[in-house]
Length: 470
Image 1: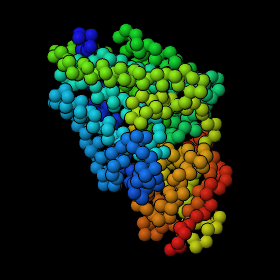
Image 2: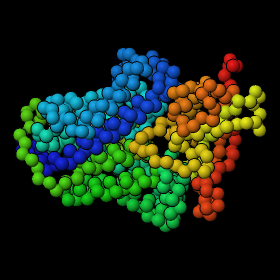
Image 3: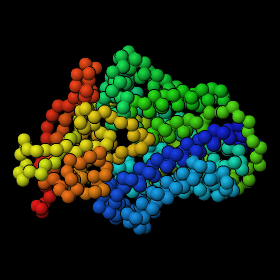
Image 4: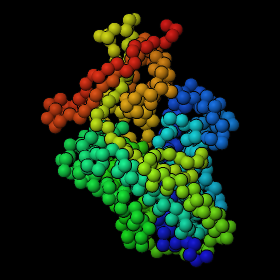
């Protein structure tokens, strides 16, 4: 079938596949380096406890059959190895069926991780990576030209990501309709980046322009993805530019990068297509069958998008094949941070020698400037932002986290930037206090060198010690 392939998009496929493999690599590396303290046998929310109460049909995963920290580490590092091989182009050296199977491996491994990841893996970019990765399995390799229907599925996914995010904003916080959300967002976002302070201090009229441009990019431009080549390429380029602007303004894990990768699949690069053989019949049948399934399953996110009760970042099936997306339907006006401190004093006095734990990404010391971590994802730091919004967000893990600090647990301390206590002398008490943070002004920055100013609000967790005193 001549209509089945689009030879002119061979370079777009190549760029898309290599870039997606790099995102996979970052995702697996994040899992490998953080899982033991979060999900391990002595983790804050252990996988064995989770699989005891959640059946396989609700959370398909290799770890439903057997779990050990060694097995999880093996899967995560195997995912890193396969992703690196894909980024290097190993799939191009395999037969078509072999390349498809190779692309299926990181998807299956990451699905196994996400489905037992609990609150640590509840972000929209997990499902977005899985949905993108599943569609990528059927893009083929250099043996055949890119299938038209798979390219369409990638555009359809990109459309839902952008348009869904635009709708959730217009239906959510009124500041999006008043064009004032960016007066607050750069200061109150989950994890600011090194340039976020400067973005916050841009003139307010420019913030209005930013919000208006965002609405155009998310509510109008997505429809142009299905226009002729020149128009769709321009639409994708505009989306890429918008996403790069977001990359500069904060740390949003690989959300922006997966969106950029999707947009790259739309770009028609000016390069002559190599001659390839016609697609085999079995490949055409498989691709069309999968496309029909995904189009059918799409009715659920479509119904969600047109609903007045639209929800964001929800998966409609346990395989994360088709999902709904969106972020920042509401924007916080005030930033709160939970500051955790420990003391070696025999008695926990308010004015005792309390020493602060420093996190890698979330604000702590007012003089410490935020760093760029994305696309790497600091899962504990992100959950600490939610914990500051409400203790209910941390109910399943915060108490255990404090216990691990009291034990000077090595795996847990690796998630932090620094501990104020030596490895052989853990604190006797740990407490948590809630502070209000705000960006300093230009004048305050010059005078103090601090990018944050913080004010004590209330006690978050009273001084706590292990049940059995040392």
